[in-house]
Image (cartoon, rainbow, N blue to C red):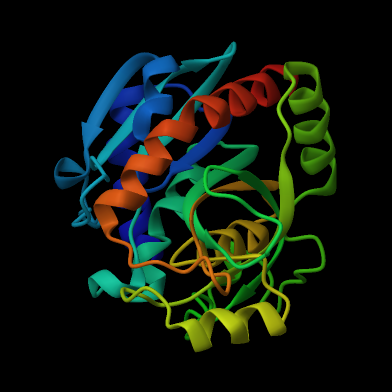
Length: 269
C-alpha cells in the first residue's frame, strides 16, 4: 500500500506543485460544487496511477485542484463504493492520497434516504455520527505510518466544524437537520423492514458511502465534516419506489445550498 501511495502522490505532486489545504469528496449528483472552484488542474482518475475508476452515473471521475473561498483545495468529483466491486481499502485510497497532499480538513457529501419521520425530501442533514455496516477499511495488515491500529471514533465528525456549519447556515438563513448516518453496502435500496430496523437502531439517514472514508481520515487525525442531502424517505406511509435518476435529480436541486454552506465554512477556516 505504501509503495502504491507514494507512486500516486509523486505523480500528482509533479502536476500540482504546492500542497493543498482542504479535501472535498462529492457524492451522487453533487459535483456542481467544482464550478465554484477556480481550477488550476483537472486530472481524470483514469490517468492517475493506482487510482480506482468511478463507474456510477453522476460521478464524473475527476480530481480538481484549485482555489475555493481563498483556500487551495483538492476535490474528488465522484467517489468509489464497495458495491462497485472495490475492496474497502481500495475505495478509501484517495483519502490517504489527499492526506499526503497536505489536507488539514476533509469535507464529505452524499445523497441519502431519510428514516427520521421529521425529515423531508431536499433537507440537508449535518452528520454528527455514523453506524457503519460496510466492511471496515482498516481490516487487514496494519501500516503504522497511517496511524493507530485501533483509532478512537468518539468524535468522528468534528464538533467544531459542526458548530461552524450551524453558524454559517444561520447567517445565510438555511435551516438544517442533523443526525446519525448509517452506511450500508448497497447497491439495492432498502426494504421497508430494513428502513424500520435502521431507525430502531438509531439512524436518521441511510446511504452507501462516507463512513469508510471518515474512518480512514480519523485514523490519520484529519478533522472531518459531512453532510447528506435527503433525496428520498424511508418512513412508513412515505415510502415510494425510487430510482438512481430520481436521487440525482433531488441532489442536483439541493446542491446549491450545500455548496454555499461548504464555501462559507471553508472561508472561515
